[in-house]
Length: 141
Image (cartoon, rainbow, N blue to C red; front, side):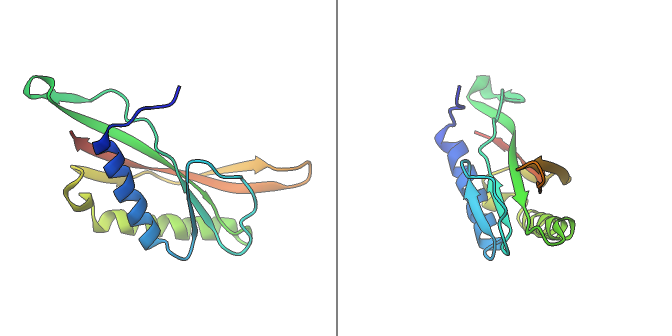
């Protein structure tokens, strides 16, 4: 079953998407659905909505709820030196987040997770190197 996000949660995801698109303008940036394939010379970053889950805190009789929302990112770097490319992309994402941890006042905090390597077999003889990380947005709606 698909996660239903509130208008406030969608605004936060749109702001994160805009931050990443603007800051990673030379990369192929996609949301949710895409075909896993070798990106060639340009690296690709995919952002997924994630699931905000249940509120971690409720304030004012439940009218305001605080969420800790994990937003998954998948990186498919150019396959020439993929580890170097992935760490460079991850470093750029970390600098973007560190430059605006409150996302212009939309969130209480925005953090990044460490990078994990995920080899994906695409044929009997070829493995595509992909990498995963997350952004964690803490916000009250």
